[in-house]
Every structure is written in C-alpha cells, then in structure tokens.
Image 1 (cartoon, rainbow, N blue to C red):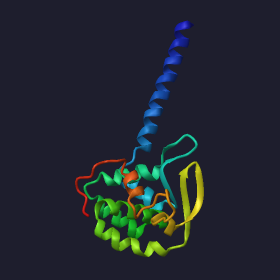
Image 2 (cartoon, rainbow, N blue to C red; image 1 turned 90 degrees about the vertical axis):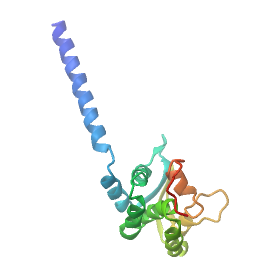
Image 3 (cartoon, rainbow, N blue to C red; image 1 turned 180 degrees about the vertical axis):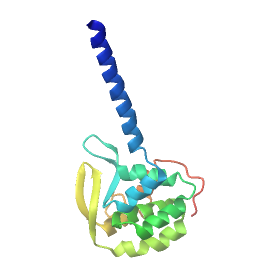
Length: 163
C-alpha cells in the first residue's frame, strides 16, 4: 500500500512538471508572437509593472524584436500597422535602430493629445500620446529623450545603432 501511495505521488509530480514545461513553451515569445503582441496592444506599458513588479509583456516582446537582425524593419511595420500603443513601441525601436526615421516619424505624435492606456509600476491611467512621446515635466520619462527606448532595451549595448 505504501509503495502504491509513493507511486501515485511520483506520477502526480511528474505530471505537474510536464504540464509546467508545456506552459513555459506556450509563453515563450517567438518573433512572430512578439510582433503580434505589439501590433495589437492598446496599452503602453513601461518595463516594470504590477504590484509585484515584473517585466511587462510588451517590453518582453519589444526585446525579442530588438534582438532580430531585421529589427529596424519590424519596428517600421509596428509604426505603420500597429494600434496607437503599438506604434509608440515602433517609435521606441526606431529610436534605437534608425534615428533619422525616428526623428521624421515622431513629429506627428508630438501634438497628439489623444489619450491611450499607460501602465507604469502598479498604476494604470489614460495619458495623452504627446506626453509619452515628449514630456516637459522634470523627472518624467518619455520616448524622445531616449529614456523609454533605452530602458526597454534593457541596457544592452547595441552595435548597430544608426544615428
């Protein structure tokens, strides 16, 4: 009887371990799922979000795209085809990979007062796009200064920056 109980416990542990491994496979981001995540996002989330801070799904997706050899093209796709928050991630990526295109592309967003969902730490609010792109308040991060793009890049040294 004792051996049977041990066998059942071992089988349950193995089943849970296998299920956990399957779940990790499901949440692993491929370049395709990363692109889809950012194309469809309606929230501009900073790097660390939640009550127990963790890297936002959007920033995880951003980093997957940034690591691709065609990152500049992928960020251009986001800028053209993404929902508004996704386009802002495209801008962040172009800041890092193609500064000339970034400078040209950022201009219309500087005056855009349309609010979008903005998640920072454990706070969600509606924020005008222009404030996310260029914020004049002291100590507030934005895209145009490079604070969001560099933070999203995770402090990586990028050899292929085009400034």
